[in-house]
Amino acid sequence: MDTLKDAFDFRDFSRIERIILVLFSIFLLIFPWLGFGSFVKTVMIYFLLFSLFGMGWNTIGGYGGQVELGKAQYVGIGAYTVALMMVWWKIPFWVSMPIGVLIALGYSFMIGYPLFRLKGHYFAIATICTSLVLQDIFINWKLVGAAKGIELPIRDHPDFLYMQFKSDTYYFYFIMVLFYAGLFYMNWFRKSKLGYQLRIIKDDEEAAESLGIDARWCKIKAYSIASAFVAVGGGFLAVFNLYIDPYSVMDLDLSIKIALMAMLGGAGSMWGPIIGAAFLIPLDRFLGSWLGAQKGLIGVDFMIYSAMIMVVSAYQPRGIWGIIEQFRRKGA
Amino acid sequence: MVFLEVVDLVKDFGGVVANNHISFGIGQEEIIGLIGPNGAGKTTLFNCIVGYHKPNFGKVVFKGKDITGFKPFMTSREGIGRTFQIMKVTAGMNVFENVMVGAFCRTDSRPTAQKEASEVLAFLGLEKLKDYHLNELPIASQKKVGLARALATKPEILMLDEVASGLNPKETEEMVNLLKRIHQEKKITLFLIEHVMEVVMPISQRVIVLDGGEKIAEGLPKEIAKNERVIKAYLGEKYAKGL
Image (tube, rainbow over all chains, first blue to last red; front, side):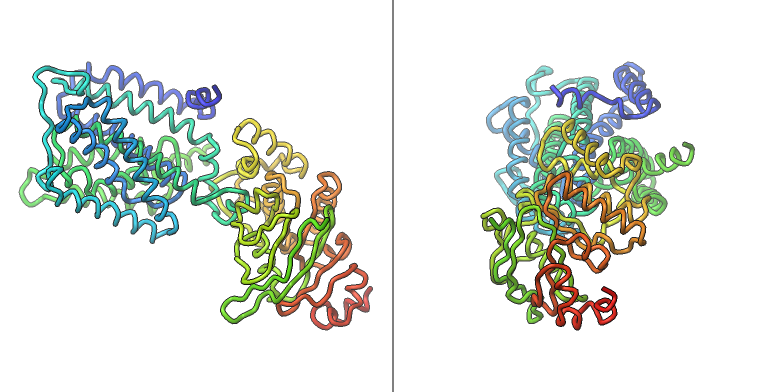
């Protein structure tokens, strides 16, 4: 009971934050009926998806303070499980997605156990490596489509079991539900025992251990939670795009994007990953399609993107949310 | 029964012997002071007991259980609390949350942890500071928060590493009174490393002296103050005459 209460209890946030959350929720609910084109709808879907990724990353990267740059491998595990089970055995999304999450959980324990012997930069490098190794395996593994990737068989009719729809609206509402599930989970998580323990591990690991906290085990748990989040998103990506390959779902780019987005928004805060995704996804998409189409301007979007991150992190290491809080403290 | 027992403990860091065959016992609800010049191996001894270092030889027995080689979080769960000489000053959590994390050592429930944190803060007279972050507090308050955090884990023995360093005389006196209260009201055994004689001598029931990694004396504060080896190694002639 207490768990449920904690998840839905936003009372410790300020009035303004709660009002914005409500307005934002209303906006999301009516968004498909506002008459935006499919491009904007896709941007919105990616925004919600990356918010979900960011929230997952935030458990280990934000609250736990571990620079984790290998989330793409779990996107891949989630996506490949859904795609392969459908191609091979025609297993519906609603069965394969939870299985993908379970595989991601198991794999994350296997990877996390040795990885969390490392600290700081070494840990960050190791996470990148494990992700790249898995990507390389998939690129060369004929059974799973190798570098060509796999196409999901398209159903004749829109099918809820397989999550195939004609209109993006359905995908939008589905990812919105996942987004809120993630949001409520995070609201519980930040107030949970693990949440508090991670925060002191981030501050002072030696002191944390002296308070009876098994720092390594806490980090492994948080890492697995993050992986589960990301695997759910990966499963969604498979049914949304109907095509996956190791470059699109397991790339280092994706890992870094997930981490940077959360850091830009504000790691270790409730709204940070959402704010980060709200900034970067539209920027990424609009600039990508607009500048990418101009001759000689390919890559400029990435320059703008990285310049923004540098400016924000130089000004306030706790990201955009850190800047907002700084102003609020001054005002108060 | 001996509450905490260190038997023939050796710790060397590749040639430098920081603790050389040290043995002693602490009884329940005793207050023991550990003194010695810089580099005598006091903090190393602490770290060997709570598990930050693994001793090369010897045993640590707590309440009849061999805890040698236990990790720090395990010794903490067994009931050994500790504070640090230098608190890392961080801005991540406020005072209340810091103490709450300590309370989470014995419970999974947030309301229980919150209640216990409030109790500990009230006991130490820190309620007013509960919304501040560590980096906003003066050293004396930081040390008290460290104490509160450790107390919240409900230790049976509290190991204090230079709890009075960096404090002015008035703050030192306050700290001594606080330690006395913790001992009397919470019935917690205290084991303190201390350089400040004004802290060790009045409250310790027994004092252990280390020098160069060896235990050179152990006894009542009065005896220690007159012990020639101790005077030579650490206290100095002036302190001995002043008594």
